Length: 357
Image (cartoon, rainbow, N blue to C red; front, side, top):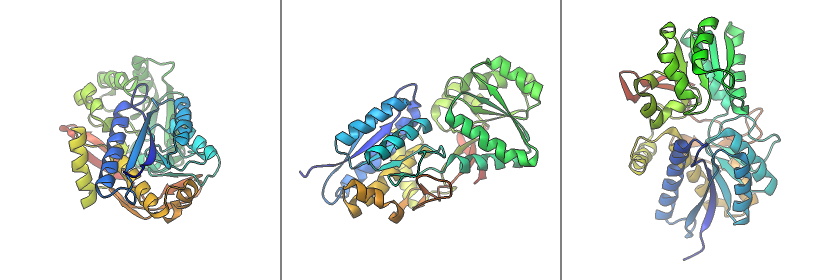
């Protein structure tokens, strides 16, 4: 057998990483690799995924990039957590390793422009502006955000504030390093907020906050939102039950899947034994792009990085092409779909599309 073409994958598989998101991301990556190999591999060579668990730890990600580079991978894929992906992208740029980021959205993925990094999900500012549009359309102008110290959460809060302020909206930050869930309820009443957004980790402290707010009769009319997508995964519904329904969040799927998307969705459902999240589709599309690049341009790292502007791949969620969008330091898929959805209170296993970006 000819030697494999190896691709590195960074995935959060253990706590404090969001392990369920990591499991879905890995399922998408692995499904696409198996299909590439069933179709003859990369010009007759098998494609091999070399997986490293980041556990949401930037230092582990940096070490993994160095290890994978030394192992001779042709390219790097994956990562869900934005802060981790940013560290991985900086290291990949430094060592000259092409990195296709699967699922992290923070705008400043690298501090300086780089030719080595491309990204599939939309920049955070695009998605969170769409979420702000949804809030305005739903009549919410007094917004409270329960937040924790993080570049990702701070960036999200800034996008919301900048989007809502010109039309009279206010965004009040509630520091969850200083407040209990009960104190959050008191603050919401005091600020007369009509919406509370969870810019915090899952399950802690997101789940206790939701439980506390849902049980406070003073807050019966308040909307709880989770722009980062916590309700997408089954763990949310398992922990919160009916309390977890009606919580709008961002996801990156089209209103209707293409035939390719529907076929892949069925295969992912069988692999995961549950409905696939948008993160699983992101994983599949990552390998679809890299396999096309490897077939066309070979395994030389510099040639792979130089191919980003020539990519034209039919993904599960649309045609994937990379451009340099204004203000972006990396190659960016400019056309990923953006939705605001929630779990239907009448049937929490069903999602309702509330807004499209």
